[in-house]
Structures are given as structure tokens and as C-alpha cells.
Amino acid sequence: MISKEQKFIFVHNFKTGGTSIEKKLGHFDELKTDVQDHRTLSEIEALSDRGQHFRKCLHAFRKGKANRSVFWLRTAIWPELSRKEFDSFYKFTFVRNSWSRMYSWYANVMKDPHMRAIYKIDDDNYSYLKFLQEKVDHSSFSQLHFIKNRNGNVNMDFIGRFERLQEDFNVVATHLGIEDSELPTLLMRKYGHYSDNYDERTKDLIGELYKEEIDYFGFEFGE
Image (cartoon, rainbow, N blue to C red):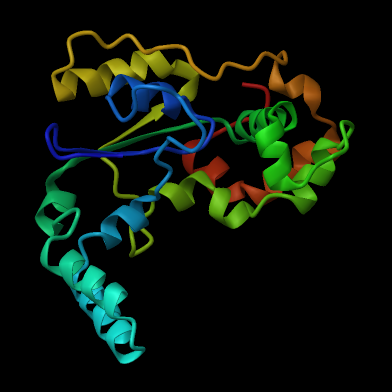
């Protein structure tokens, strides 16, 4: 999410309270399917790359795609985000314990017919283990993948924790000059403590697949 008025960039990691944050910051009025902005930091940074836009313009022109060529020319001349804006805007995100986040995503998919259709799951008893093994591109689902810039560095001004969502959002609100910082409650799912839904195999699998972010943020199973 980009706000030129308030000069911030919010990177919305899946299942970290980001929908409530986007609603609070005015990204959408009504919660609908796919209304959230899940662009990674590197994708947002690419908006400011005029050279890349000009190259795409030239490539489309050579392929005889006039409309696409014009589109990329306009994007190069008037980018959605300038380099100066990308460098200077306040960048923030929220992260969540890897074991908690991944089980929450599985539970969300299994309870949502639209998501079940996307993942092609028609078995009500489809296991968490199979979901992790067969349905998730873990390299692109990593929280670090979302917040690394194009050079592979974490380039954020503030990283909050889902586990203290309101408290940490208060920090963001203070920086942005938002007086009423209370977040709306959206997309809440109740399934008990996430650790109750793990066995040794799924626990170890998350530990292996998300080792980089677990080490980076200091996540621990059971917290």
C-alpha cells in the first residue's frame, strides 16, 4: 500500500493483521475479495525504475504491441512512485510467528470456499501436512521475501509484531499523525492456540522451510 498524501509504504504480509491496517489507513471502504494490496517491497520499488519501463516500452514496440508500448512510455514518464518518494517514504510492515502464521493461512483457506477453489482443494479432511507439501510456494510466501528490496536487503523503518498488533500500530500511528489509532477487527478465525494443531513432523517442516525468517526475527515455537 502506498500513500503519497501521508508519505508511507506499507508492506502487507499475509495473515499479520494487514487487512485491518489497510482498512484503518483508507485503502478500501468495503472488504471484498482481493481488495488488499499484497505487493512486496521489491515490486513497489520497481515502480520507480524508469529505465525498466523504457526498456519494456521498446520491447513492446519491437513486438508490434503499440498499446503496451504506449502504456510503458507513460509509466516511464509518469511513474506511480518516483525514486525520491520510494527512498524517503516511511516504510513499515508487520510480521508473525512462522508456525502461527502458516497454520492460520491453512485454516483460512480450508474455511473459505473461494480460497479452496483457488488451491483446488475439494477434500474437507485435506491435511495441514499435505497443504504445506503440495500447495504453498514457500520461497515467495516468506515474510522476508515480502520486505527485502531489490538488492536483497531488509529496508524497513519499522517492523511490528502481529502478537502485539495494536500496541505496535500505535507507534506507526504516532509517526503518521493519526490520533485515533484503534484498529478494526476483520477476518478473525478462532481455532485455539496454533501449537495445538502441530505434530513433530509439521513443526520441524516449518522450522526448515522458514529457518531464515525464524532466525532473523527470533521466532520460537509455542510463543
